[in-house]
Image (tube, rainbow, N blue to C red):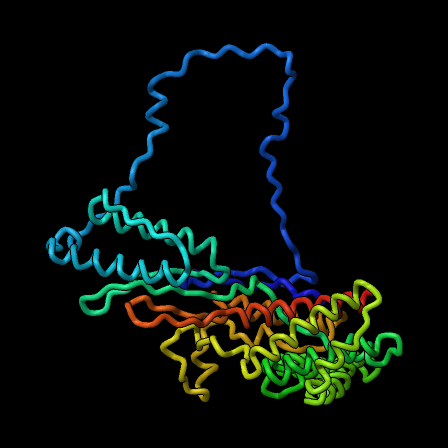
Length: 396
């Protein structure tokens, strides 16, 4: 299953918006630059004569500085305070430019506050192009000092990162695909044990509640008997889910991880992709042995609430928490899957934001954190590719 597009999305405003529903496959949109098409004329054609260009058109080619909105506070600043603000501004900007390795433009030929505005715009434009997870830069004021704070954030792109276990179950029971299955089993064990991805048969998981809800619906339908195809699909999801959790939770799969990679011989594109996924996961396992997917997430994306009361977690939750869109689940086909996705969409429509890994960096003269979201980026990529190979296997 390729990671599913759904209705979750990053929203820069607190207003709740209706989001898109999940689709069965991920989509990628390519933009085609059509500039230049149809511009090749007959070389023998006589050039069309035009009237001379009016001098008034030159006005349209003139670039003007944007007029900044002035307020009473800015007008009331003394020259001493303006000088202090400029010093703090460019000191913080210099530290931020050095950290992100970007060029710094100081517009000394411009007066306050245009020199600050254009210098900030130039740096912001560079960081946006260079830093994959760049989200925002804000200018903070604390006491008499001002400094920049940058926000880096994983953009999960309205995606459900759900890993199906039924395809892996089928692979393990196929003599031809058993080696490949064992390789991917080690990947799943790493995601389960180390990264701490939720599993849908765990009572504390979000998806466990959804599967339980479907079972209650079926039990309340008096017209359905025990041989109903819907009840059989749900029972299959439970039985295989319990069996596969025993397999995936076995830490021996991590002990055999490297050996399985080194001894694996791919014989086709599918096996090559599986090997690449395993190699990338093993690299994370070695470089980030104790890191979890939750290491840079905060309740309601508020860093000030890092230590929250878990007893009141559900009551305080105002964004889509990460364990709701990242999880192991049963399968990506059938009536059960369709109803799970519909239910997820309906609930996610009630939210306007999503909990994603975030890091903040403060440029106030102190040492800047070297933290990055490389680990989280790699985890999301592995899950996406893993779900895709399971989807491809199911379609064989």
